[in-house]
Length: 180
Image (cartoon, rainbow, N blue to C red; front, side, top):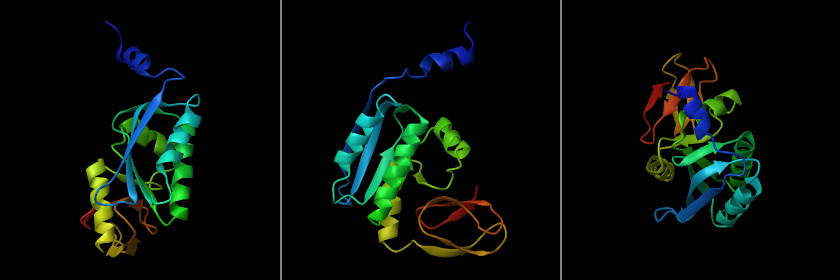
């Protein structure tokens, strides 16, 4: 009987695996695109993935929801690409929302010190709902930190840290907040 570790190693995509990116513009938000990965983002195909994102990010797109539910793997260079995309969208007064991230990708984000840097959502529907709430005036909001009772400003749904006590705070699309 093969070990679980061996079976996990066999599932890791080999360099050169193709990543296919499909996208669609949201019917609710014409300046928002939802992109879905299939495959793996590696150093070998990073240029092709970057060109796909360039095609998605036309002048009218200000918000990008990236759905990781079907991605096999993303390397550090792929995370770097997400950072570049975030900056490009921030320059347009928009944002990138990463959703349906697998635990391995979340760990990589933590290890790289990027926890709380990206806006995240459990799935693409939640990401679109959070955008709707931002446009409907729920965000930004000022609330008291549940851990230390300091007043904090929350710009958008997702995870962040209190600047005073560094507690992890999750803000939900409806404006509710919790610790963790």
